[in-house]
Length: 282
Image 1: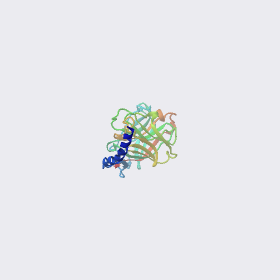
Image 2: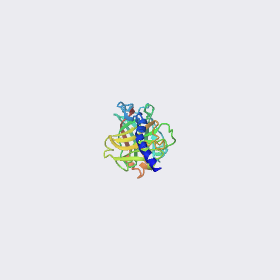
Image 3: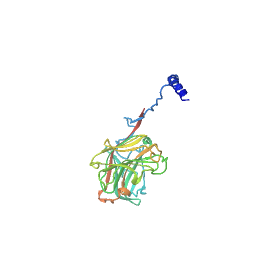
Image 4: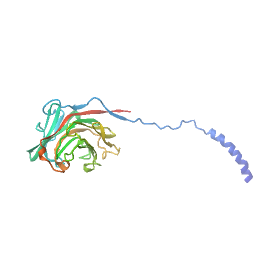
């Protein structure tokens, strides 16, 4: 039996190469098809803006107002009006002024302006050039809220804070986003100290695309929040938003160390607001 096996084995070895050649394939090797990577940019021409070139009241075609003194969910102390007593344009500058005066049960007045109509925005670059008010108790903001709250009440539908400042912590400017996962004291935030925030105009900017929200102060990147791709809890920022400009007094953050009544009247001044649409290339 052993001799027979030894006799057959060389024949098998000799036969093997011919079998290998016969079964050879002429098919091309598999190649993975790469999907084109989208690149996002922004138009060089402004899509919507207000340069505040006409003296008097802000343009009603571009702005409306939140009016009232309910505390606005933050225990704020001002009553927001819709008059030139608190928001007025002169010499190319919008001035939002908070005053120490009683109105409808509140001890301060101010303004909270809301962009409307053509300023409804879904992705793009938002630029606001502004000079901030000084003084303990002030809480100015340049920010964005959703138009329709498609994912539910705040914070589920998102908030983008392009600039916030609290007067008791001078010159420290904050960029933040709020959503279902990150909000209030847990919000995603970055802070930059701007020594001349009260005495000079600075450019506050947000670059908003489907993949990220990036914040820039005077063209310096200060904040990045990336879309995790897991849905609206972390990324409700796929719906149209609008811009708000306001100067709050006191409140849960601005009033932590009280209000210095000797500072009034006090103002935030805005040179312009500009929105550039997003562009996409593959």
